[in-house]
Image 1 (cartoon, rainbow, N blue to C red):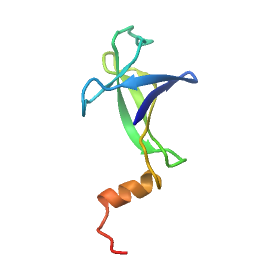
Image 2 (cartoon, helix red, strand yellow):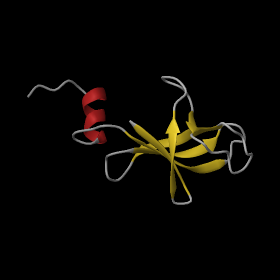
Image 3 (cartoon, rainbow, N blue to C red):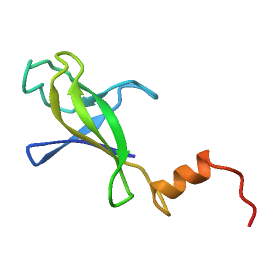
Length: 95
């Protein structure tokens, strides 16, 4: 899965410090507000994008809690995220 922070029209690569972590780190950048480095971000308000290929959420600095952009996660999918979630979390189907 590819994860990015989109701020001021630029995409910054995010990485997770460990599996299932509650935050991501913006590689090589500092927070534009509090200048914390490493720049840790968390998301709020996750939703599926209109193109059905990515999740997006509002991004906030973990240190100062200020809005820093949009977090976009692009997982691999064949049929789109709505169909993936329906298959994973929906009723059992027999075809």
